[in-house]
Length: 207
Image (cartoon, rainbow, N blue to C red; front, side):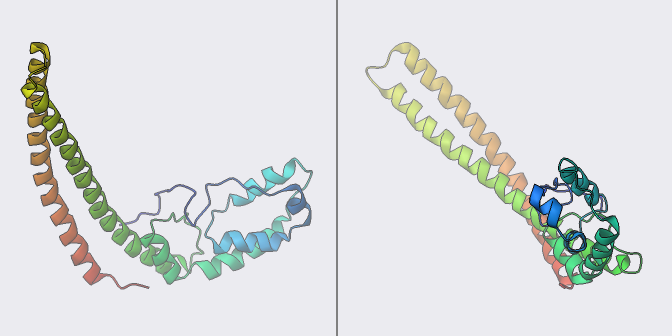
């Protein structure tokens, strides 16, 4: 299964979606081959040069396209190795389909292996977060029940306050019951996700 069309936020290592932020001095003095190399070795997409062009246009500077492309090709050949593909996939990074034809198959296979592991790990972690959220809500509701019971038993409480306390207790108890049922189902799902993760870990070879 291919995951190469998935995109993540530009806070990841692969920053292809982020705008170029080259300064005036950088635009005028930069070695465009080095810029291309850095973009290539980071696995950024080919349209990255367009970002640099727009960033430098306001300073009247045009990138040296030939130098940039030469550097980018060298960077991509360093980047497009299986161990980098696996590392990108297992960390949930984006692959922008940038690797040369002769390097792409091995890179993408490693990327997909890592990405499949990332998806399974993320699914377990997400289930854990959902379980904790529901347990946290139960604790809040139990505190509310205790407060409502105090209102019901308080001799200084008005009849309206006692009635509201009983109603609040009933509603909280119903919600707690719903949450406990949801937790039971989610725990089953979480166990299944963990089993799938454990099984997959036995099949994949880390790079």
